[in-house]
Length: 216
Image (cartoon, rainbow, N blue to C red; front, side, top):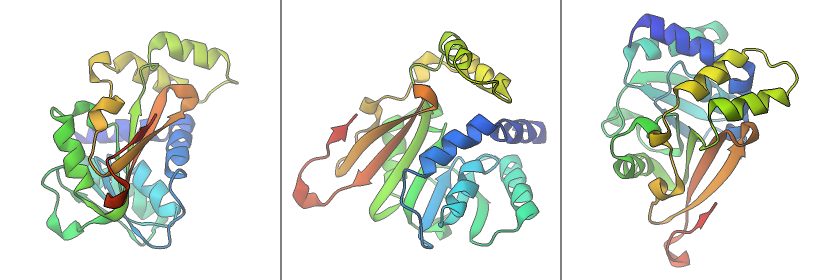
């Protein structure tokens, strides 16, 4: 992508509703005390910054150098430590990032050609007992549902971002529970933004507890 795309996505991530739903997703994890958080497909870095604010030492990784530069630029404005960004791809991240207590990916799994492999790659980056956080639009994310949602809300700043998100979402790319099977992990779903977005948590369970369960 170009620098123009990076600026556009930074603008999207600045929308108050977009920030709020990602804050809610991060709050599903316990507050950190310096534990490691790895954010794959970080884009301009919103989720990485929120995770850092939540008490984690965060590394954001994106395949697009322009996105990484934008994320670094936004971080320099506030100057936090314990937050870095690198260029890398899922399945072949910089080995120096190591493993993490939390791994996240927002709006990434929907564009992966092999979701089962993507989930395996993501969970492989977790330390024992770790948690994978995935954020994806739900089946309700459509222009009609967004109109209904906005009709019941006070005037929403940057509502155009939500309308654009709904109009560009491809139903064929819907991420479902069946895409997220991972042996040894329990899956839970949390509805965000009035159900328009799902936050999925895959938490590793002890082998003695048997096969993975799904609470959805």
